[in-house]
Amino acid sequence: MKHKAASLYLIFVFVVMYLPIFYLIFYSFNAGDYMNNFSGFSLEHYRTLFSDYRLMRILANTFIIALLSALFATLIGTFGALGIYHTRRRGTRNTLLSLNNILIVSPDVIIGASFLILFTLIGMKLGFLSVLLAHIAFSIPIVVLMVLPRLNEMNPALIDAAHDLGANDYQVLSQIVLPYAWPGILSGFFMAITYSLDDFAVTFFVTGNGFSTLSIEIYSRARQGIDLSINALSTLMFLVSLVLIVIYYFLSTYQQRGSKKKRTLGTAVR
Amino acid sequence: MHQTKAFNYSVPYYAWLLLFVIAPVILLLFESFMDVHGNFTLNNYQTYFSSGTYIRMTFNSVFFAFMVTVITLAISYPMALIMSRLKHAQFWLMLVILPTWVNLLLKAYAFIGLFAKQGTLNEFLTFVGIGPQQIMFTDGAFMAVAAYVQIPFMIMPIFNSLVEIDQSLVNAARDLGASSAQTLRKVIIPLSMNGVRTGVQAVFIPTLSLFMITRLIGGNRVITLGTAIEEHFLVTQNWGMGSTIGIILIIAMAITMYLTRDRKQGGK
Image (spheres, rainbow over the protein chains, first blue to last red):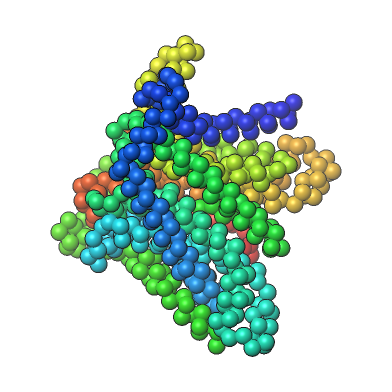
């Protein structure tokens, strides 16, 4: 009986969590124009979506920003994690880590507003570059948090052994350290992509007029009311997320197998 | 030797710390002491504390964030508890995480359709005989959507702290004659408090600063600190006042972190 109640509750919460998403997907196939009265199956809204030149360009922008920012954030973040890893003094190390985490705990509006002040101060034009820089900036700390535990788990004797056997610093880095940290680096990269794809508030502050990402575009369209091509778009985005999370899931289980300490998937998010 | 080398590789990282972490906070603080013409002033803080509007807005914002946190916690704790006892717990956790990968704007947009005057929820209410209600642009709608968005971020940390509990402690409690309610109250809940604290932080602080949902769903009836900051920066262009509210938000955040800190000594 108790067991049954638990299962019911579980199902209920999952239904509530997924209902809005499937609701969006369901009505993307509606022949009518509103999110009620399903009047027949149609792919019309997908056709509208793909012929919407503006939206397609914004979609491309969004993915370019996501990939580029994730790439740079992963590069900078990985070497940042190495820097923290090599910092011997405990106090300095903790200070660096606290500084690193500031952007993770900061509310989006604060990040957005302070970046806006920064960009204005240095006289940067708001647009592609300011959005890219902002996305790199808020993705770096999560990369560090993904890579650093991996480095800490590494047996330091590995590095000493490599040095003893005559490897130079570059070889130690490329043959020992980076391969060992690779799963962490990859998860960091994927987290950075999702951070970028998901961001609305920071982008909203630093985007200026000409440049727009998907979140910004959906915001301005949603303020005008229902447009079912947005539903079609969300269906496609949902599929992309599904693919990404499957990749991420395999990466993290791979990482878990490789490490003695059990790390659960949930700690990685946000 | 290799230590200095690693430092060189890390230069961009340290530049990032300086330029995008330390500088913005200082700039925000400076800006909060500026008037619209860029002169030094304490007026922003004076206005904030003396005109009742800002104080009321802050209390409102804290109240809504508190309500959303309580609702989320009430839904999430039992959920995490049930999930932690399931066989394929990691799979269920993944199902919880998946919705967080759907763009926040799309989720808000879905609720516009659900809550609209002729929307699906109203059709349902008409069907069961209650009749259509005004749902959009109410406080309730705002809290429902905010809680919906935050639930995964509450479930995840609580779930993680629950699966980390040593099962033998639970067994020991049962062996010593504790009922399952007692085990829950005296063993499981205290041991999972860390997860609850993390969850509260992860929900309360972002809810204080939400501004998109307040506009799309709350119809500007609910003004959070975040909405006020956005308004001052992007609409009225009064950056000084916006920064002042930003500093208040940072202080609110610090207080939250302090109140929900890990009180045990010598932990990690």
